[in-house]
Structure formats: C-alpha cells, structure tokens
Image 1 (cartoon, rainbow, N blue to C red):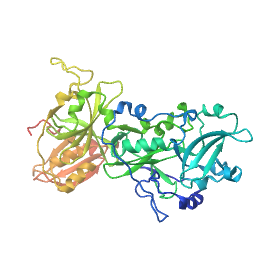
Image 2: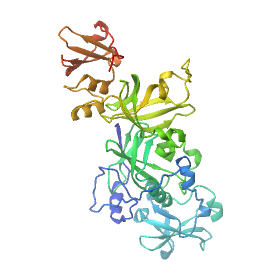
Image 3: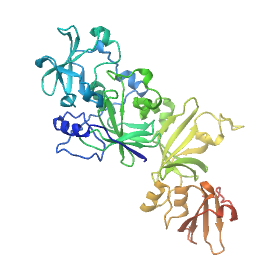
Image 4: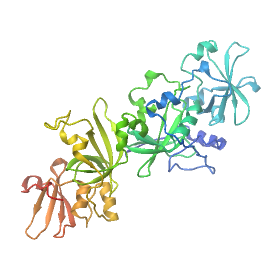
Amino acid sequence: MKRVFLTAGMALMFAVASAQQTGNGYIVKTKGAKKTAVSEAETAGNQSSEPEKAHDFISENFKYHSLCDWQVDSMKFMVMPEKYDMVVKTFRDPAQNGREVSSMTLRHKIMIYKGHTEGSDGHAHINFLCQDDNKMYYYEVPNGTFEDYCYGKMGVPTLAYLGDVDIARKLLVGKTMFTKSTLFRIDTEYDGDGFQEVTVPMNDEVTVTQVGVGTRSFPVKIIVEDKSGNEYYQNVAISKTNSGMRDDEFIMDNTKYLFAGSFELRDAIMTVSKNLEQYLNKTVHTKYTTDMISKGDGRDRTLKVQRMTTFTIEAIMPKNNSQYVTLTLMEKETRRIYFKDVTFEHVDDVTGDIDGKREDYFGYLFAMGEGRSRQTTQAARAAIRQGRVILGMSEDEVAMAMGEPDNTVESNNGRRDWIYNRSGGKLLIVNFDGTGKVVGTNVDRSKAKTTTTKKKNSNKKK
C-alpha cells in the first residue's frame, strides 16, 4: 500500500494532555500505533445479533438532531479539539465567573447536554456537565439568541456526537463490508493524533474490528481489517449531528467522509435482489475457460481461469444502471479471490443474445457444485494467492497463479515453455521440465518479436 505520512500538529501539547485521557472506550487505534504512555484505552464493542436492513441502514438507525431539538441528559459528546481550538477556546467555567478553559484540559472528556440559558450579559449559554470531573461548563453563543443560532449547522465547536458512535459500535462491529474509497488511514501514535494515509483496493472485503470517536466533523471512527490482517480506518459523519458541515460540503474528496462514501455493507449488497441470495456462499465451478480479475503484487490483473475450477461465491455486488453484478469468488484450493461480472438475466436459447455476451451469463459460464479437484503444496498455494510462480510448481498450479499462457513452445526433449505477454513488449517465460514441473522463469523483451510460438489448446480434455 502506498503511504503518505501525515501527522497532526501540536504533538507536544497532545502528549501532555494524554495523561488526562479516560478509559471510556471511545478512543480506538489501528494495529501498530506506537505507545508513549503506560495505560491503554479499552476498545470493547458489542456485536448485533441480528442483521440490519442495509438498504435503509443510515436513515433507520441514525437520526439527525438539530441543536434546537437536543434533549437534556440524553445527548452525549466528546471534546475533540483541533488546531484552531488551541487558540480560540470553546468552553467557560461558570464557577470561575465565566473564565475560559483550555481545550486541551478537556480533551477526550465526555460532555452531557444540560440545556441552554441566558447569561447576565444577554448572551445565550449552551450548558454541559462534564462526566469526567462532574463540573459544569458552557459554550457562549457569539451573537443573537439561542433560537437564532440553533437553526444553523454550526453547532458547538470541538464536540463529537457520541450517539452515532454508540449506535455504530452496536450495529457494525464484526460486520463484513466492502471499501468504496481507496484512501484510508492508519494510526502512528497511540496517545496522539498522528496517522498515515494509505491506499487500498476498491471493493476490498473487510471486517469491522472497532468503532470509536473520530473528530467533531466526522465523529465515527470505523476500524476495519482486510483478509491479510491489515487494519485501517475512516472517520465518517453519519447522522451529521453537530458535524458543522453542510450537505453540499460532502463533495469531491470529502465524499469518503460519509459512510456510503467509504463503505458498503455486505447485507446492503444482497438486499438488491432477494433472488440472488440463494447463490451466496454456494460452491460453483467454471464450465469454460474465462477471463477474471484477480489481484497479484498489489495490482489488478486479468487472468484466464481454467474450466472446472471450483469457487465459493463470497459476495454479489450490483453494478449501477446495469443488469450485471460483480461476483466475488474464492478459489477453493488456494483461497485466492477473483472478480467476475455476470448477468443472471435470461439468454435467448436460439441466438444466445443478452444485453452483453453469452459467456457473461451466469448459467452459461458456471455450474453448481465442485469442479476438478487439484492437489497443491502449501508453498504453491501461498504463491498462487500472490500471483507468483515458484520452482517446482505444476502446470495446474501455474495456470491458477497466472492463468492460461498466451503461447507455448515445446522442444524435442519433452521440455515446454509457457509464455505470457506483459506490458512494454516483455514476455514472461516459465520453463517446465519433462515431468511438467517449473525449473525456471525469465523475462525476455527480445522474445516478443523473434520467438515463433503456437497457441496452447485451452479446450483439451481435462
């Protein structure tokens, strides 16, 4: 994954303030964040036992609360100051005649909404009880009455709404999702705000491991883990309660800070068509050699997959404005992931016509059940998942790793070369001995124009 290092400012101030951090469970970190403090924040989360109706997941579970409608004692927030808040203080202490309080002394403390009042100077006060120190604080509205102020989306600075975090933690921890953005983050500091930006594949299957608090604008921090054990996160706005951002600001790069801009629930994918649920987790095999997309060495690659290859259907994702869906397929032996666009629409029995190609029709390309069994070594399975060729592989194993060759060359002594066309005019040549085992590989640019080859018969009897 390509990484661009970023770190939050005010590192020294944050390190000092971290000593006041409470064990409330809302501060969560990805794997590998460096610890500079002795204690760790707890990261517990509850899993929901029943799946949500994902097509209405946001609207059904996350309600936007206008400041005008905040409920006393039921609205909880966490103080998450940013750089600007180090200069312009947010809260005042009524016990000290309205003296301003440093945002860093309140960092990561939980505030419970206690209604609004009018101060002696005519300014409206939005009042909070700090759960951590049991003291009252207030935010002074800069201008106008509370009613004038509350109808805007400005809200109270520094406060991340914990209601969304609590609901997301209950409903999402343990759930399978797919990435809808390629830009995410990993933590670099356990007790600070340092992070690295990382790029990940689109439509990567991930599992939610933790949910915690993010920032005031994007209060729900969702940490996910991919199938290789890598963790990364996104801070997202869900209900947008006290987010301080207008709807029209979630455009361009900011769309990833909406839940739907970064994630799609597996349940949401399957609710598109109840008829397709019957195929999920089913075993199928290919009836014909076909092209599929897989990932090797961090790149998407088009591979020719042999007939009789057995898969489990891991997910079914709809394609916008199309009768096609994308199947996520896990090859049985190697557990390598492939992607194939297919349609389940009817194919004309005479012409074979659909809105596409006949070989894209699920019923034409796939049959239910197991295909041909294969025997592979543990080392070969690891290489196949990465799209690599290693010494000692069989022809079957090379085909699973690289697809069918573009050409083959046979010699009189029984040796055989498989040739794969690569970008830039290069050829990848895999050398087999007389027993069909790999004895070497090389990349040759000159072979692209000088080698006389013949096509491998991909339709030979299996």
